[in-house]
Image 1: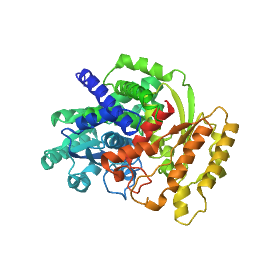
Image 2: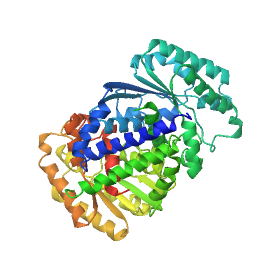
Image 3: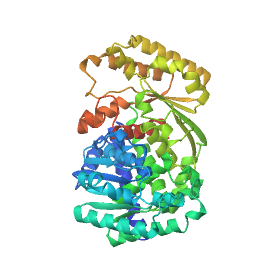
Image 4: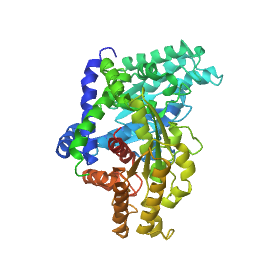
Length: 255
Length: 255
């Protein structure tokens, strides 16, 4: 990601400024005329985009699994998928997004594979976001899973290969598995957790996908306030952590 | 609020641009140096601020009532209080906010009064945000409540008068009760609902409080996409509606 800062710098400034213009305008506090221009820009080339968030409890974030409609507040949960949805839908009302959250607490790569037909292929996403990996090591350290770094790499590669074959036009976004150095995250997580992160980045390059550097983001954030502020148990983000993830995800996705 | 647009225009541009600078910086994608300046600006004069969100189901938004700690993701729910918390905490990590959501589904003015000691005075908020009124008419139209516009005005005035006496230093923010013209909101809600909105604005002026013009915001938003996009049942906002409320609330609160 070393070559991205400059390019994303101007993009992030523009996106957020436009966002403010549209939000502020709709809020009736300003920019009545500008906003229409901005909405038009935002719409350009977007059309109706289906976004699917996949992962474990970090993505699940207490979503109501009885609700299946896209853009449903309860079905989106209270984590970064809901915040991304709120930002994209709320600041681009004239655009059209269908956003689904199908994260399930406790999931590991094999769990995604087992429900991929129903929870991915059937959804036919234009953009698929996957955040998986922390349980693959956590459950192993707890003695509830035998998967190794190799298991993670092999299973994740098969999942992505099949997904690209079945959904060749889908933009796949790999979210970097992350931990904060506090709570449940002990020294014995390393270097294996780093190795699993390296796998996620390796597969991103191998399949030419989009990568969201969440670990880098949280490492920088932890320098400001300490790790607990962003995830008390080291794994599940605070509301601040989820909002930070949402902004970073939108940047990385180029939306 | 006719005199506010210009003033809020520049403010909203600045706030969102700073937000993007800080978020993008922490996300490790840009502005490493600028962000420190921005964080310093954001911190200035803030210190440790306790914010309390009070209201009905719109504020409650599925919060976990067993969690009582401030800034707790589950305790904040998935509505505008959580999104405000995410924005304020996530983009101002060096600052210090303690944010509580004590909204309870179905509440009307008398319900707030009945739990005000425990759910307001004991919290000792620096900023108190109140959004109440839709159930006062909804339950009446359903035959489950006898309150009139006068009951709403008298009860709300007593609540605000006592609150200013007990918490003289607290900044009170009155959120305008709102509805979208769809779902459960029928013609028979008017003009009584307008009269109740007028009461909220009248009390805001009477006690020199801060007003958040949510109806105006949603009226403008509905012109872009129709009302259902922002609140399918006309009362409970979509995730887009909640995010729009969060941005507007932050603007109005001057945070």
